[in-house]
Length: 184
Image 1 (cartoon, rainbow, N blue to C red):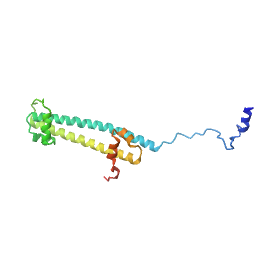
Image 2: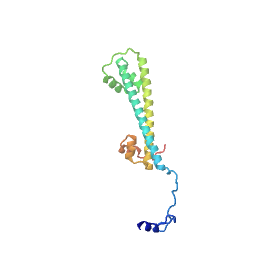
Image 3: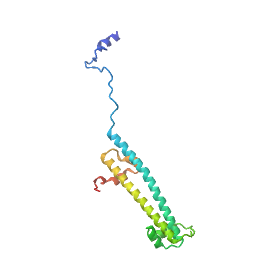
Image 4: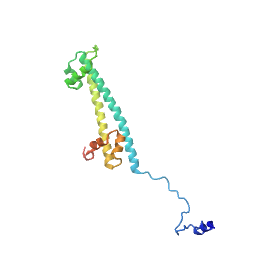
């Protein structure tokens, strides 16, 4: 008897529900869900920050390597008898810094290279180091702009940006303060 009462409340062919409204007759295909533009933009910003983080690590490593090599050459040139003022002029360092670098590397032996050749190599290394530092600085500036844009548009909070960029959240706040307001 319980089954017959169910039949009376909702007839399978009538299309009416027990509340009196129309019951859906069939499944209607609605297609794939529309992508959320904010989620797509968030993924794009996260990918860009991850890429910049890797590039900054590579460029920072290159700058460190060039700086170490420059300091080795400077110390070797001073050990070989080159004047600190000439080495400072070729390297772009202060004469006191040249002396400090030379004193820090005590166990060097004369290389037998000419002073002019050493100064030329030091000048080339100093130019390479400056170019690498400029490239890293430009990438850091671009990262700051991306972080400022993401904070301004509220795509990600400071902690998500910190995780993606490798910086601390308070550093991000300090770096991006007023960046969107500047006119370049």
